[in-house]
Length: 289
Image (cartoon, rainbow, N blue to C red; front, side):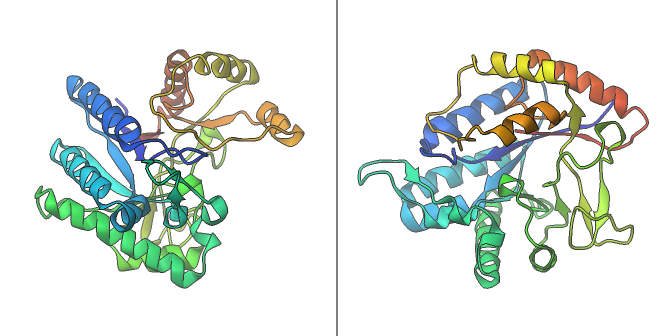
């Protein structure tokens, strides 16, 4: 039987409307945890920790609500890990009375910032999430040891090595769809760049699992998934259609395994293919959502 690591990014929408914490975080996560409990399962939540930092400085009341919710997640047996969307620090209110935010994607990646600013955001965000974990009182063995880059934008090697070394993070899970899905590695060591394997590396990469998906399945899945309601009241990042992106959609047959973008019919089919391909692989299946 294969081990499966189910992961969710704990974040608001990152498009033109962030959505509200109740409809995009509290209620959806509570529903997920309810289903997990019914099946005696757990998952890992990658907490957008720069969002926490933003709330603490701009809306303390929401920060307290989210902090208590994260503590509840931890106390239920699930784990929380480290996730960063640095452009939150440059967010503004939708309106004076609104509970939603407008985000500037100019600083979407840590590499969009000066090195000193990127380091500060990383450490301040990590330390804030660590403080919340301590308040959960689950024991000293609970560590935030895994990082996932916001938008899959892996930072430069220098920043990665320095920030991993200055915190308790030793695992990265930002890589997806590298190599052939039929011959993909499920984990490897690296020194400072998770895309470059190094047998004597100090850190571990556990990539999101990918699979091969033909054009017919992709189109059918897109039609079906577009009919499904969105859980939340925000608007995601729009991908503007152009010739190159349409051509890429047709040509690219590799997709990462996600509950967000897969209709249940095609998700089950993808998992069966992955299990067959990984029959001789001792690594886990990692699902990102």
